[in-house]
Image (cartoon, rainbow, N blue to C red; front, top):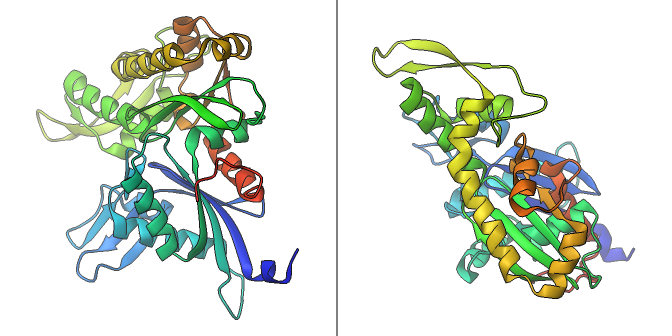
Length: 341
């Protein structure tokens, strides 16, 4: 360790549409929803992360909640910058120091984003205090986080279903050979549930309630080995305007999510079609790897396996696989040629 390393703080950021994770010294130090609450009058940040999430859908006219990322990319530049700054403050909470160390960052980006969108991520990181900023593509970070040796001449297919995008990529020799990035993921599942409840049950629910339904009874198939119990949902009756409670089962939610899951399946089949034959042979042996929060949907691995006739493995702790990989890439920034400077 050199003398100047003492003045440098290394942090890895998985900047997700739904959640942001920050890793420092091999530990996840921040795991918060990607949301900011702002005072409309002063434009000052009131809260970020979990505190802002508690306000979401419950604010009065002087407070607005913003999700700065949409479909895996920055939609609101200023809010994203403020959010990254606040999360970096959380990393150094309780640490007293005479000076702020310069920051070396590795940030995760979707594989299908444009140069302009990459620039927005880099600018936000630099304005938040990043002196050295590297970018890594999500499927690559997920593969490293799962424990795959990405530099060997062996083909592996990674499917990372996040909040805003689903990234499907074939990785070999430290690079992405072919990839598909579809803007259908966890947020779309949540919107599907909201829409289904409105059409089928005449009940209006908010985003947070739909998210809760997805976690409690979300499923990709109508037949599960260990089905979850029915879930009580509270919302507003569209006919009377009075709050009411109804019960929903996993079978209903499986029907509601069917269309979005079919789009992800089509993208997986597309990626398999584009794969060079030698790598296809490897994938036949190794199977497909699932990561990201969306992969935790009950029965999704089985459904994809039936569709592709290939074995499907879910990553250990899929929510943090990308963040773990980003952290490993940060430690080996000089060794990994696929980090984008």
